[in-house]
Image (cartoon, rainbow, N blue to C red; front, side):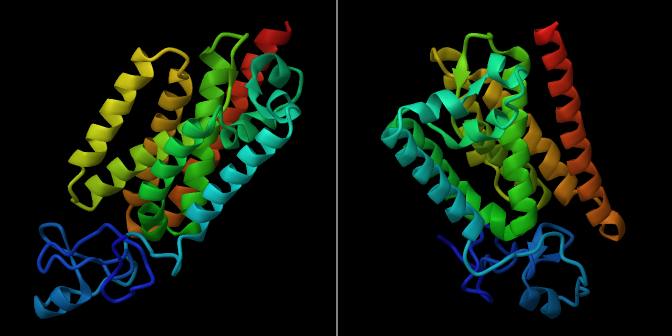
Length: 264
C-alpha cells in the first residue's frame, strides 16, 4: 500500500505530476497540468491552496477495515445460524411487508466464502485510497449510499421470488467513485475502467448474478463521487450534503412507490 511522502500514516494512490511522489489530498496543490506536492508547488511559485480538493482523514483507513471486519463477522454469523439468511437478505415481499432494514442488512451478507472473499479483496484494494482522499465521513456515506442504491434497484427491477445478498452494489459504487475521483485528479484511470468493464461483462453473462445491484451501486457511486469532487470550494460542503440527502430522498420515494405497487 502506497502512502503520502509527508504523511506516511496515510494511504494514497495520488502522485505529484512533477516529482511523482505520492501525496494525500491534504498535500495536493493544483497545477496547470495535473497536481503538485507542497514542495513542487512552492518551488514553482504556485499559490498554496487553503482548501484542498479532498482531505486525508486519518492514519489508518479504519472505515475500510471496519467494513471488512463487519462483513466477515456477518458471514461467521451466517455459518453459525441458519436463520440469518432468511431474516436479513433482500427479499422483495418481505421489504414490501415493512422489513425495510433488509435493503441494508443484505449488503453485509454473502452466499459462500468465495463471494465474500472477492468482495472483501476489492474493498481492501480500492477502499483505503478512497477513504484517504475523501475522508471518513464522505467515504462512509459513499459506501452506504452505493449499497442502498444497489438494493433499491434490485427492489425495483428484480423478480419477486429472488433473494439477494452481498456487498457487490457497494463495491461497484467504490469502483465508480474511483473512476470519477481519478479523472478529477488527472490520474491514470485505465485500470479501474477495465475492472468495471470486465465485471459488467461477468455480471451480464454469468447466471445468478444480480445485475440490478451492480448497476444500481455503480450509478450511485458515480453520482456521489461527482458531487464530492467537482463542486467549487466556496459551496462544496453544502453541495455534497445536498446531493447525498437528495439521493436518499429519491431512494425513499422509489421504495414507497414500489411498495405501493406490490401491496395493491
